[in-house]
Image 1 (tube, one colour):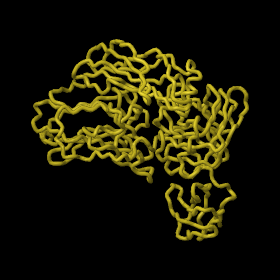
Image 2: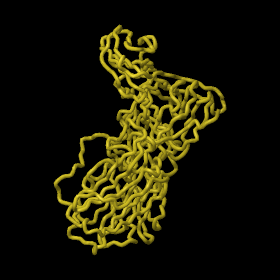
Image 3: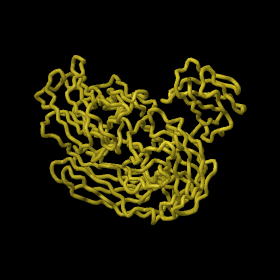
Image 4: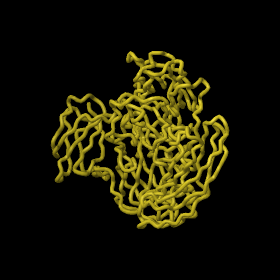
Length: 598
């Protein structure tokens, strides 16, 4: 039997968007006046509250492909908290994200003022494409309070950014509190239905050919100064600085002028946490043609920084900037910052997941993943940070093992050498430090300098769709990932970086409030199984009250409460089918058990 074993799918969660106490609710403020312009270049993850009412879209610089300039607003199937609008149905098609302007005063204007509304849009980006039944729509609010659809585009596959020009000629739009609103229609859990927009502009005295914004700005994020890792501990970096540094660091500029322009650019470097100046680059000048990305690069700057201690966090702020071409040139995208972080982990990813990665497993065989890393000096592996993608139905009950290898037999030895394996972990999704879940190893592994592998084992019968891992598709270079679903290790053919990071240095406590090292198989049981009415619990009692949880296949909590050993729970009203039972005592969570209700 032969079938694809590696897969990518949509991101069903965005941990960067979460409740933070802010509100974009409409305030009784003076209406905005023309021109209205936003190119989403702020470093906030939410739309600018001075221009927009709602906060459902995701402002970022990673989801766009061939961006117009730094920053886009991304529409998908996730709400302002970064979770699906519908967490139950995987077929729901709904109106999802919206982006609504604050009121704009057009009372003093008329159709004779040649007012045009323009924006750039792109389907899919670095996510997945919206289907043909999905769409991006633009509505405008008339004086009578009715929202009118003035433009829409049905879903399609990846395309370059396209410009839309809409003349404002209907007199019902010319009043003191005009508004416009973008809305996307999405298929929940069928696709993440990504749309990106940029350069939203509303102004008078324009024409149909006025599609360009006189602007030069940065495009994608700058490259990191490391040649393979994105982040690593500073003591590992300083042990082989010459080997870890890239030959150059770079970015690109994009011009929206109609003619070629000369641009002067440079950069500065400081250690951010101590505010220590490190380097100031010389000014450079280049000629940029309209609409053609112009790469700029710099040779590596000298580094001579000593942190307070061997395990101290260090952050180099590489700030790139250009000089404005004219007084009307938008300046927000004239500066871009890349933080080169040195902390207690090794990483190939940039911290954002545009897609999810999973293995298609054979029912009777385990699924293994392993990522190759290297150390420049001996160190102790303390834990692993993992960014899991959410699944519908939920995967919280699926167990996995964390494993450490010195070799997996892909470099000619043919031998798999296991250094450590710790079992019965479960995936976690709650927002934590750096939006990863930190799993502490109860048996830290002392590693010599050189190559090692860290990964997971998903047991047989764990489900054909496996666990979802965050995938950073912006990764340039090899992904260092290997997988094993047929008792043979294979190099991954998926582009990007799997978001799994080994942790070193000082002890890293787990971010799990309930330990993932669980009770053993013999420490507790439920009977009978299959069960008709009463399910009896048997376990070793301790000082903490025991809490039981019963969930269905979708992860919905069906029944929960305190229980003593020997007591029973009445399940006679529960529909027939398969369920999952978990027991929690203090900080110890049990192995999840399957039960059959007759």
